[in-house]
Image (cartoon, rainbow, N blue to C red; front, side):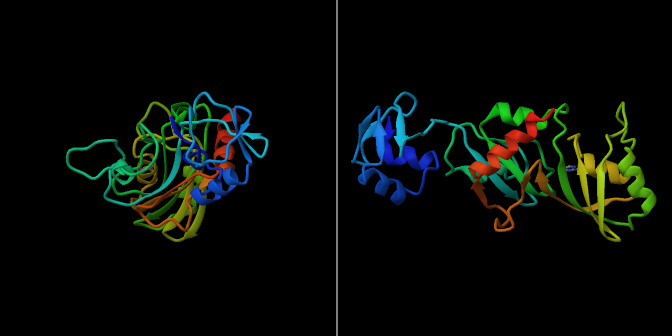
Length: 237
Ligand code: URA
């Protein structure tokens, strides 16, 4: 059981003060009965809660957009290094885990959730969800290298990588978009075409982009819109 105002807050109806206001104004019904006390206890997974005649569905899933810094490992536990989940000790939601993996020296967008179904779909090779990286390289990226990356390269697996998309930003920096998630894939792709990655940052995953307002090590919840779009990204194939 939890307090009505906390439930509405958790379900992103509004801030604690906004939902208290809604309750006091009589705009919230629990099992058909208008409730005016924010502290009223409810059974979040059984009771029917309506706000302004709209059903508020209970979900224990949480979704966070995290700006992973360098020097942190993408794991739930580690004996030596700080993990991405060390940033989420105070965060709401049980059994959080990172969706996919960024290397210790890679920074950027990482989705943290407890929704296994969505995570699985986002990582499924069948869904081909695009991931875009900002890449800096040791050597100049030539037209020939770009062409090879776009065709698919031999990184020592059974098959060549799937065709990537490139956008050259300077002689030694580019945006690289891939639809797979093989171990060290971007670094291995750049190595396969004859150079080395000197800096790597993920800037998007499907429709979800790294929020420029998030400093390294900061996170925020996904908006309803972002979540819907992300689900849509996995529904396509
Ligand atoms: N590719 C890499 O090589 N490293 C990452 O962290 C992500 C993609």
